[in-house]
Structure formats: C-alpha cells, structure tokens
Length: 115
Length: 116
Image 1 (cartoon, rainbow over the protein chains, first blue to last red):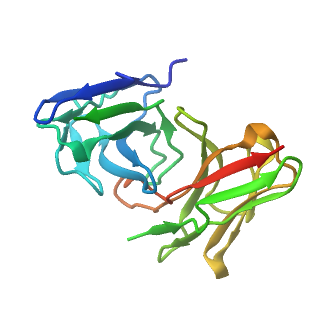
Image 2 (cartoon, rainbow over the protein chains, first blue to last red; image 1 turned 30 degrees about the horizontal axis):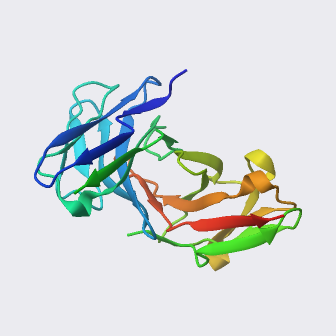
C-alpha cells in the first residue's frame, strides 16, 4: 500500500537548470495537487488536477508547469530554476466525493535547493 | 477567498499537561476544516476533520477539536500530551466547491515543543 510516492527526496540544482519532480499515487484518486512549504509560510498550493487531462493553477503557479496524462501521475516541472524555488515540495491526492473536498493524502516531500 | 490564522508560531507544553492549539478561519459559508500533523522530515498526516454534524470531533492519537461557528474557530485539544506529540501542526480549510476541488488553504503552522 504505497499511497503517494514522490521522487526524488532531495535535489540540488543550479540556477537556470530544469527538472521534474515526480508524483505517483496508487489509490485511484481523481484529485492531485502540488504544494510548497517554506518556513513561516505554511503550505501553498502550486497547481492541482481534478482528473486526467485537467489541470489548474493554485496560489503560487509561476515558474512551474504540470500535466496529468494518467490518473496515477502528476509531475511538477521547473523549466528554469531560481533560488526562490528552494523549498520542500509536497504532492497530495484525494478521492473526490461528488463536488466536495475531502482530506488530502500527502507524499513524504521533495527537498529542492537551487544555488 | 478563504484564509486560516494560527496565532501561535511556537507553543511549549510540559509532558502530561493539556494542550490547546488555536485556529481561526475566514470563509463566507460553512467550510471543511482539518488539522494535520507533520513530524520532522515527514509528510503531513491527518489528525481529524470537520465536515458537518457534531461540532466536537475526535481524531487519532487522542486529539479532538471543536468547531465554533460564532467564533470562526476550530481549536485542537489534547488532555495530556506525550513527548511524541512534538511536531508541527497545521490547520486547514477547504471550500465546498460546486465544480471541483480547489485544494486546501493552510495556516502557517504551530510548532509544538514538549518539555520533560
């Protein structure tokens, strides 16, 4: 019972490099999302998806791209990394209950440092 | 837009003492309310949630929370804390969306320190 799996757990990038944070869930959840966690800021929503082929922006989407080609996977792409993107990133999913928002199931996080 | 305020950045409690973590939310209708706990280096784990019905909800690890509409609050309580309760606690609000999920809005967290 893997739940939500994020890779890599740690990554160091140089400014301007690109990378993809992977997220996969095996619970057949329709809803998937990416948050970033910064000290004193709590968690802020970057992007989310309510199903394959559907994505939308959250509170802090700039500098990030997402796609949802399958129900299981929701990768987060940084096209040109900046030091301001140094953060801990969490992927989370849930089962949509009609039109309501349920609890989120979180991955263990990916710590990204941009030099 | 909804918002969540956790007024206490840090709280220190002696082991065995009672605990109350404060959470206030701002939203025009009845929200979904959650408390999550994050241990160091870990993801977030759901402690409890309020959707409707009884305003006193029970969660895991002996935690409970009370929804008070008049005060826009959802404070987390535990009668007797254990050293293992030391962690970061997040209150979150979710909206009742008619067309899909908009994610949760989190407070900035309260860091709980347990003194022996």
